[in-house]
Structures are given as structure tokens and as C-alpha cells.
Image 1 (cartoon, rainbow, N blue to C red):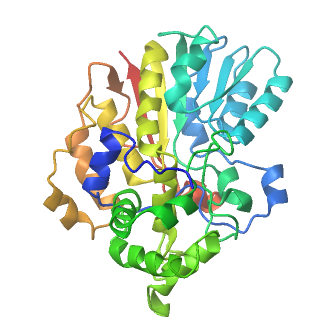
Image 2: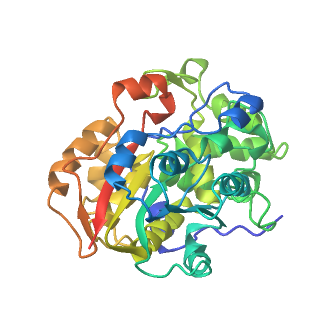
Length: 379
């Protein structure tokens, strides 16, 4: 079994030590789409109209899509703006394959890049893109629809598959899978991860149920884990939680989020992506960041304000704990007033308030329901 790294960096270790409140609602969600449907339409871009308006791309500019995914935003840019050069970056080999296909449709315009945010500096330098060479950038955080809809990737609790969750696929054979985490982590460490990265209030109870189950047999499948988590609660609690459309949400949803974030070191990678965008954008260049749960959004907000991300937020832990019972929207509304006018030495915010999808978009694309868009201009 590969060796597990419990703390990937100062930011992640701080988050494990001090769980933060909020609610989880991954934009990939849980749907009944088949693999065939996914291949036909792998990605419906979220807040597409707003992203295009804020990026304000001009013909001939250089655009960096840090999270190409299914390519929805990138394809719209190429269709609408002539002569752009689009850097299509992603850590997922399947997304890279789709970017290569798009490069064939737009010869000389699309440059596919395979790698993590933390590898982007070297990868972009290989394309002769140094500091200040990009006009606009888009970062769409979290898991993609393709990843969630492919059972073999092990991201979704609604589809049975191997408990994997690695966004990099098989690029790093020694990288732990989610199954390695649930079988090898001690109960206390597992509870810390569930609390910090899934914002799960019942982390201790769930970790204990996992520890009991794995003592009987290893946990290897997604629906096996979902059943173990569900078994820690009475039947009435299985779908007692609701998403932002007031639809039932499985009790294991936050557990799956936590494991995914941990396995892929998503929070530190998000910071690396923001730092990469900050380096390559020219003065006056625009950055759009889409986030889908409160941990991502909080990091993005603090980064664009120029705060030290290794330090705890200004609120103390007791204040965070008391706010756990509130709705995420209420928490965000409280923070927005304090956020206004706080620009860093690197960024100027283009918004007075975070942009969220319209009711119409949420109804037509439920996966947009938890999206938040933050936009800033590079100093």
C-alpha cells in the first residue's frame, strides 16, 4: 500500500487542525446520466454568460483556462472571439485528450497542457509564456462533471465503482486512492479530514463506522463506503439533508467531498492555481474564479484580498463553530459587507458582491446551484 501523506502543506495542515463551517454542494452533483450521455455532452458550462462578459476577451488575446474539463467555457470563447490563443490546462488525462481534439479543430489556436496547478509555471514556460504574457484567465475549481459521471473514476456515491477519486488518473502510480485513505488512516485522522474538508458535523461517528467496517473487510467500492456511512445513522436520516434546490442529499455526500479534497490536495492546488494566474496575467488582465463550496470560495476571497492564507481567518474558531448551524447563504451575506473595498496590492475586485447563478440557470442546469463567481483585475 502506498505511503499516505497526511499533511500536504501549511495551509492544509491548518485546515485539518481547525475545521471550518459551511455546506457542501459540488457542482458535479449526483445524476443518473449514463457514460454514453457523458461522452456526448461532458460539460455544461456554469455562469457562461457572466464569465464571458467579465473576461471581456478581445480578438488576438492569449487566454488561460486553468481547468479545461469538458471545455465548455473554452469552446464558447473560441466560437465568439476570433484569433485568440487558448491555453487549455488540466490535471486530468481525459480532459487533456479532449483539449487535444479541440486543438485539431482550431489549429494553432489551442495549446493543450497536462498538469496540476503547482506544475503550471514550468509547463507555461515551455510554451514561452512567462510573467505578464496572458490577457485573461479562468479557474473553475473542484470536480468536473466528467469525473463525477464516470463510475470507474470513483467520485460518485450514486454509481458503484472502485473507490479511487484521483483527478490525475494513473499519471502518478504511487498516489494514494480514496480507498487507501479510508483503510489506512487511523480513526482520529480520518475524523479530522471529514470535519475539515467535508465540513461534516458527524465526522467522529462516521470515522468510527468506517473503522469498524474495515476491520471486517477492506473498503474498496464507492457504494460500499456510502452504505457504511449510511449505516451509522437511522434510516430516517439517510436523505434528511437537503441541497439548495431542497432536493434530498445523501448522508455520505460530505464524506465523499472530504476524501476527494484530501486525495487530490485540492486546497493547496487551488492556491497554486491562483498564484500561477497572478504571475502570468499582464497588468489589467482579468481573472474569473468559479467555486462550488465554501472552502474554495473562502480561499479565493482571501487570496484576492491579499491575506496570508497560512494564517487563520479573522474570525475565531468559536465564531466559526457557532455559525455551523446557519445556512451558507447567510454566512456569505455577512462577509460581503466586510469584503467591499478590500483590494490587495495585486488585485482590484470588479464586483461589489459575489455573482451567483440565476434561478433560471439553476433550473435548467442544477449543477450550477452552488456556484460562486469572483472576478478581479490584475494590478
